[in-house]
Length: 493
Ligand SMILES: Cc1ncc(COP(=O)(O)O)c(C=O)c1O
Image (cartoon, rainbow, N blue to C red; front, side, top):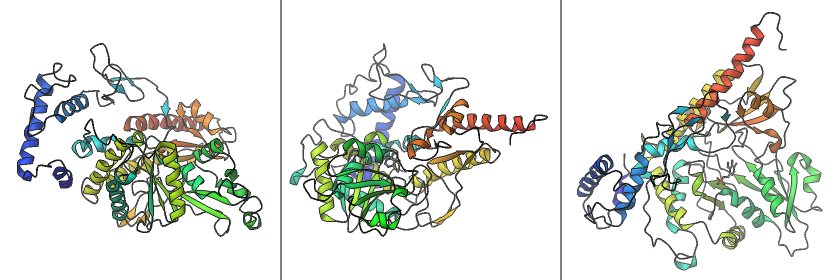
């Protein structure tokens, strides 16, 4: 399934493709043999087998060997070894086990373990990259982009910009032709970069802008705004406070900057601005989840200011890479200035890795190794399984979602949200987070989204192991409830 483009890219000598293939297969076999017979002598020591070069490769071989040796260590399918993991007594990094698994090879299941469904850690895509290990691998030289800048004094890779634009066009989820791209260290950094870019100058006479969002909203908008709160802007609360037309149109308290998350985190609704129509309101569309594995794509998003992250489409949250698409020249310049002044541009190492990842995604779109088809399949199966259990409950409910036509898949697709937005229905379960915690399920309370504590968020994005444990605990909860109801003389309502 290796994309031709990547194969070609790795053969700068212009060697014919057939010879390249033969070479890589010889190299692969050599690596497998080395894995079987040479451990531990050559495994993590970085030697090159004594030959110094193989198939025209020289300095990259020890690193490649080390990466493959680490990846091949068996952690029973419930953990993995990372190159930068803590070294044990034998000098080698050991298995890092998934939650609820332990032991040197992660084969021991912790009985009756608590399910942690709190964070939006997108590990559901890890099996995809394991399966497509070659396509996702990136090699760095020791001298790769050591400079603060790339030519022309820029901080952003022109080629990565080009490939991201290609990805949006091919997926059909954003109109890119009339927009600037601004890279950042995750889209979390863009929250403040874009608020700054849309705010009045801090020496202007106008009052600070109010940053608002409709509840339930992604809590980082408030956390970030409050952290940098100052002369330019301040947190203005939820849109419900301002939705009344006359209040939103009044500029006496400054304009509005509204975060519109679409699809929304936590409830997956495709949203529109609540303050739309108010001349004093600008909107920042957070499109983190506007990719075909999480939502149907009705049309390319074409708002003036949009933010994206690589954390959710490819799952590379740890690389910390996000980008904004901005129509207006001056707003884009201010956002770029913010990122330049705070971190002098997104890490060049990250940009190189993202370039490889985006190219691999592009090379497989609509094919049998399409990452969005894979991701949608995983997420819709999880949503189906969760609904099958929750539908037997009168104690908890989740948001209702219908199948919708998706322009990317060119068919009606089943829902596959990143999160379940859970409501506790029983009067006594006023604090839904606590009620689920008692059932050994860690969730994220709706209080942080500025809604009632009756709501809490369950992450569906984590690893297969996390999801399996979650399903066990939810099934226990629902079974216990049905058992109580079936008991003679009981009444749960
Ligand atoms: C709606 C939304 N926006 C932004 C982010 C931040 O993403 P990043 O990993 O790029 O900082 C998240 C992360 O969960 C999110 O849910």
